[in-house]
Image (cartoon, rainbow, N blue to C red; front, side, top):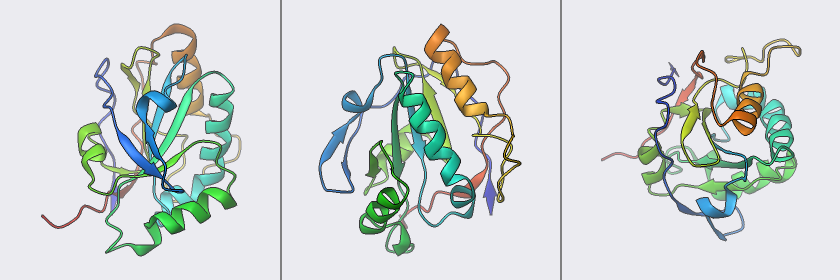
Length: 184
């Protein structure tokens, strides 16, 4: 079922984390934060919404890194119910797609809860001082990728944040599969 998270809660603070990457190393927010802003993405391997735009996510993440924006991807899904989202499969996906940014596993789902992440993909764009300025979509893609010339909403918003410290006031929420929460 498609989920669309709320739009940006401007100036909300980011949430620190220390999560393992696909090689087992612990990565913290301070290690990935960029000098001009930071993008925290909640994604996973199995979601058709993520899969349809993964090449664009990687393209835009790498371009943003070249602008001094730190980028991190986090998977928070319950791997007992969705084994394709396990760290071993995450490592394979990251290698196949040439991720230059960390792909972290939120085993206890506490980071997703702290951020209020609701779906995959869910994008959180922060200013250099750690204040939320963007929570919107990558582009007009949904379950299927939009046209190749679709407006790059996330990329353009993050460049604006890097240049001005402020995100665009008009944002369109992302859409994707719900995060697969563990049973309580």
